[in-house]
Length: 385
Image (cartoon, rainbow, N blue to C red):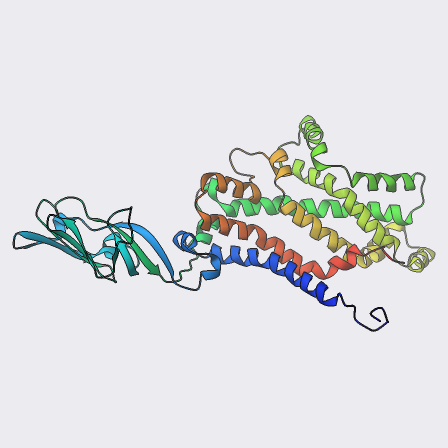
């Protein structure tokens, strides 16, 4: 009964659940990256992005201010008082526990007094206020070291984006890498589309000897591994003087994307109504006029679907950029290579890495969502008659 027309399959719920699971698997890391890009380094180390809206406990080492400038006589002792957060110049927090030794950072609670021996004591309140009492010799050394476990409120900042996009250091500027990536990606997407559209029209509607062989060659080139052609292509570029530059990387991306572009566009153009083209020829239209005024407007879904693939692949590429766009000065560094450099030099700065990574995926997300309605139409081109 499940196969009767009009009835729903028993697998409908399984399909819906599977799609929802795939969406969540893709969505959670993206949302986490976005949230982490607005958090500080302390917040990231203290809690996960899912707890970013709640206070988080952090343990850190602080030191009181110079006792020589702050101590006040009290009989045979001296007293140093102040606020440990003010001494360190940080935002006040709520102290939950503290200690004076790294071996036990939570030995005392807020408001308790620690006996440091020989009459020396240290008291720390919940708001960070402290009283340090001891002899002249005891309170004349450096400020007392204290390990605090404090609850910090949720904190978000735009400083990560300012550092990533507006950094004055050329080697650390993601803004320069963003511009370089656009310089590589936009021509490397347009050039193969233009060339492949002409070739696809010729293979779809023009009769000439060897057309079937050319179609077979295009299909065969789809399975050629990228890594197999890198070194020979680089040697060719170096031999003709276009290696290690934008022109070389444009032509490399064009060559690697051309087989898929021709195959996809040719399949779509073959499926267009023959009567339209024949009527245009009867009216005296040339092949170029038919191509520009009829074929191209009707083939926009296929052009858009390939543009999405080519743009995403070129934008996220690292291998081709490493081979064809090596620049020691950083003037042509793309975003993927810049993130690799950040991983090497700033391995502990997760807030900077999260911000740089989200900046690198923001543009592809905008392109994909703006053109995704054409993607399925273009991919299904030529699948049915």
